[in-house]
Image 1 (cartoon, rainbow, N blue to C red):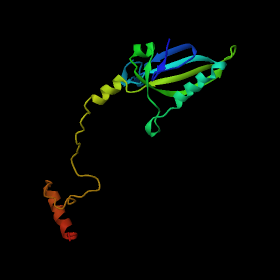
Image 2 (image 1 turned 90 degrees about the vertical axis):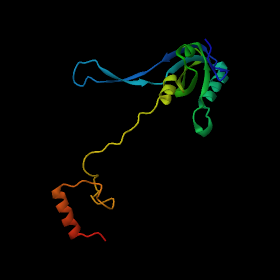
Image 3 (image 1 turned 60 degrees about the vertical axis):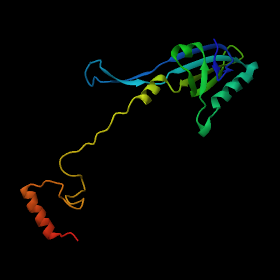
Length: 180
């Protein structure tokens, strides 16, 4: 199996890649035994990579670390075009390193056991979500006036319909506190 990131081969022995697609859902059962869930979307696909790099090939580990630490403009992690059969089968084209890179010494061999995760960028669900028209927000109002406002806040209260009692109170208010 081959793993290429922007055309640069990730070298190592026993390369194993596990692809994951996380589907977010919330339990809607409350305190019942109902099995209803609310679908909350698809999260980016990930590729968990494990491989072994012999101690004598330490340059391979340095190359992998250089790829993992690479940044693009603005200090963001570099995005890589990926070539791998598992990634292609999952529809993954662009990835970034995520969740760190670990290398531990093997128990019985003179080698590092290396693990890292590549996370999909610009996934198909993400592109679909961005193309989807945003839900319009309609203005909400309730009867009455805004908190902290007064009937005469806009200069004149002519745009509001007052009941007979409110008209009497307004006349009294205007008499006691005339507008300057």
